[in-house]
Length: 226
Image (tube, rainbow, N blue to C red; front, side, top):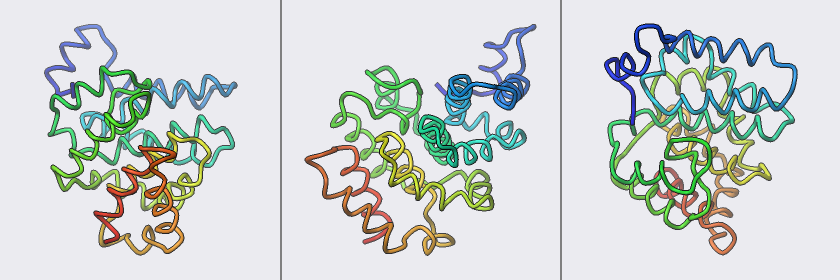
């Protein structure tokens, strides 16, 4: 369930930590972390908050989107995965108005650690992708404008594109999802380059290898390249 002021007040209580302060503490812990595992857990936690538009202003204020993009440049594949996953979540803000049975089912299914619709690609791929494509077809969604602007201004699109070539399946899925939402008239020349379309087409044709790659790639092509 997505957060609003009333729900957040109920969760926090009189003496709880305000959301902005909690996110600031996470960022500070990440900056001070000495080991990779701690960084991975913190970025995963931040990515978990990025799916909810209630947190967007705080994430923008704390430069968390820039932190996600920095993670994509790291050699640690987990940081890359969680970084682009956070970007993917942050791009899908308008989806929050379509909280529905399918979303709740996805969040409580056999899934990865993130309660959001695009960062869950585990176990039952056919069932999951069916729900994803249902939402792609139901709504002509685009990226949250403020988050999209930050990603673009920070040269994030080339970083996301490079994630399409990752050996980690989740990273590729998150990159496809992020590009699906980010692509628009102002940046389509940067995203829809021949080499990108060629790679996405290869994923689209690889249904026998990966259902998620194939169906998400086809959704991207249907919306942006046909």
